[in-house]
Length: 377
Image (cartoon, rainbow, N blue to C red; front, side, top):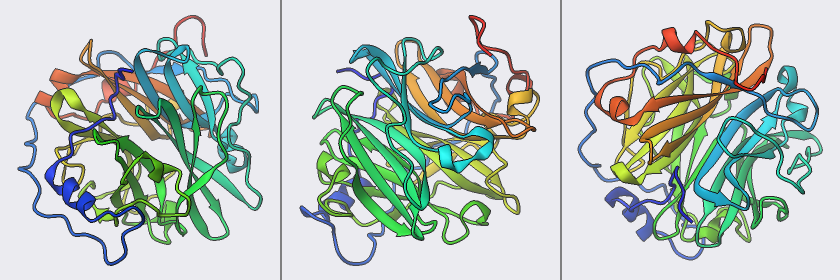
């Protein structure tokens, strides 16, 4: 199955050294320190604009609010189980975490969304004594299945769990991938390697959580796809490595990573807020890497909050896909209005322009906003 937003990678030297340390189970001992990475990717010199202004999307939710956050999208070159686009997302009406239970919707074009026939959302029920958040959806080509990874906050722990499905409608019982004290494991993002080894990035915000003044994006590598549904937490994973994905004066909070095979690079879109603020504010940024550890970060926002009513207060977790046929980067993102309502949107960028020029603050487009086609609101 060909995937537009390919998450299959060529393992690069720094990552290979991590894998060399893996046995069939978790690797004991101190974290592996990466060797010097490849030469940094140079920053370009001219600003660009998106192809068009962001489109606000209408995404149905099980609670009826239509307010969503944390979109994560897989784009298939040919439909998988009846749909070209699969999204994991959570309702978030007025910021109520009790509804933040991962759900799955599908689309033919990435614009119009609905639950797949035969599925009743949410896929993940609300936990007792906590809440869910941060879904990430990945396609396991070796098993021809979807893997849903998400975070549960409960009992003072950030528990990263996973569920699998071979049809997108029937899902396995959850398995615990890893568990760390609050809030040392936020916003998981998974990409598969060519050797069928999953790569898992997550944000370590220490005990500060949404109020943290500094965070670290960490990477671990699995020995096989089964590391995503282990028999016990941490089984089949390398030790964590701290990456360089960060930005002076900003705090990284949520991140999504893919591998763009056509360019032999990892690409990331991440939400970051100004130091001294909280995760309830922030903009979206773009970064590139040749090994997933050392990153070149575009220092000005890929997209800024403000200008339209639905993006007025903040932008938030986003997801990206490389449409190879059109050579376009599609970015689905979440946004909060000044009145506290949450929405999802879609914006596109020319990949040649994006890779040749730095991304400026896109106020003209990102703050223009427009309503979706076909009468959506």
